[in-house]
Length: 68
Image 1 (cartoon, rainbow, N blue to C red):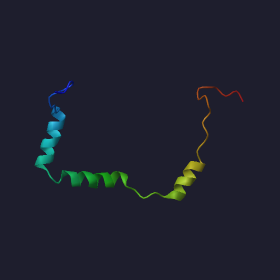
Image 2 (cartoon, rainbow, N blue to C red; image 1 turned 90 degrees about the vertical axis):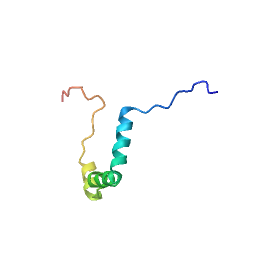
Image 3 (cartoon, one colour; image 1 turned 60 degrees about the horizontal axis):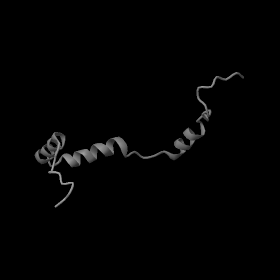
Image 4 (spheres, helix red, strand yellow; image 1 turned 45 degrees about the vertical axis):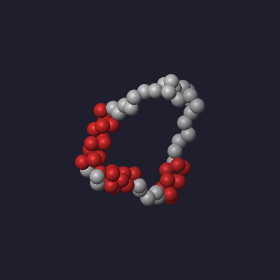
């Protein structure tokens, strides 16, 4: 006997997603294609280094007024 036994619970959102996946088995492939379209980009390292070099260092206390 388990002391903290809880009956199996699935939320409505989980049930909905499972139903969609059962109706559209190609959905996972489309999701991976969309992920590649938006996130898997080639990195231009020379542009990245130029971007990093052009950044201005932030002051330790950003709300301090400058009285130079």
